[in-house]
Length: 216
Image 1 (cartoon, rainbow, N blue to C red):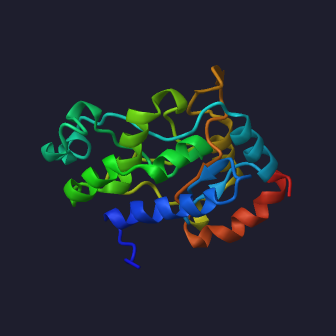
Image 2: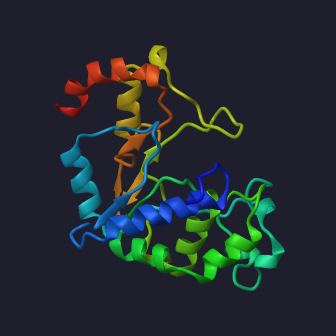
Image 3: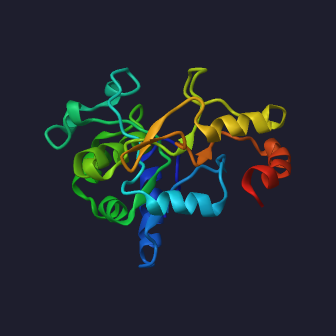
């Protein structure tokens, strides 16, 4: 088995294998991919209800005109994927079963990425967002449910360590004070179910706050 390497197509291969194995259980209807630095912002019942009640999947997919977006496009992908169809997005997603099946069954777009998406094209940031935008636009909310802070710029988001963790921080992530979104065609302030990027040193204070915030 090919080892998974950051920025390589092997990351997409791993995602597709995870989905394929989860799809073997016919009772699985929602498929969520998270980072090991993610934390839940709500308890299991709330997360389950939000995902199960949604008419749409949550895959972040957008047209980024910068060098880190369109600048990664390889013209050899045309005509299967044009520059206008090229998308970027978060690697962390929540997909309905129909969409998960489509990702696993795809060969056409996967082969184009395998041949033409190599650093500085990072397949895990482009393959699923592009595929979903082309094949399932009406089935996707086109947003992530994982809160992240990119305000500092650079290739990686802000990281939260022990000294950064507070109830105020977590409540701001939960209550939508910095964002509004749509859920089943209605405006809501509950846009994020998870958050990242949390360092292992943040675990102890997070566990101490969990009973009050998550109702454990």
